[in-house]
Image (cartoon, rainbow, N blue to C red; front, side):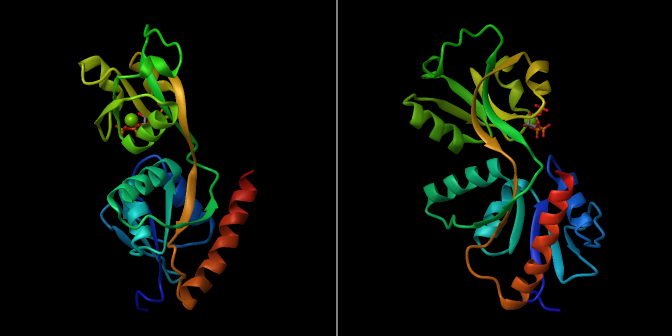
Length: 225
Ligand code: PRP
Ligand code: MG
């Protein structure tokens, strides 16, 4: 079958969402052979290909129409959409359905002992983050100025090494914050995983595959409730 008739879904190769995403696809009855090195995996019993990439690349691949669908965290989705808008790139997509995994929050955290007395205490400070656009939007909404330095991982280390005053990063259990002597002071975005699709209509064969897949996804989520 040609690429025009196989539905292409982007998913996270490794990280917070990859196990749950793989489990979801499996429960939907998709048979696929995922090995670490195989980045484009064919589903053997349905006309679907799974493209395994970095999570930060998923929204752009869907917005540009390279992939028909993507499973991604709302945090990454919103950050990418804001960044692409800023750069004048295509940022539209359809949120096909929310998914019931990948729960986390994007929060500002400060070193223990920091005298926090509301958002004004953050004015003029410097934050390490992977999400500068979401942090900027929060600062703008609150009428404060912040600086940021971009880190793509191990963000919590930044204050201790003098790179930043505080951080803005994902919190799930809170264990990483605690282990690094940080205290959450503001939640700025709540995130879950979503299934997204390209804004332009799918071809008829691809739409037919999605019409089969979507009820299965919804059924799996209902069964988990
Ligand atoms: C993520 C996130 C936080 C941590 C939150 O990092 O960036 O650091 O998990 O989880 P917790 O609240 O349950 O501790 P990850 O472990 O994926 O590593 P990275 O940031 O270095 O990529
Ligand atoms: Mg981290």
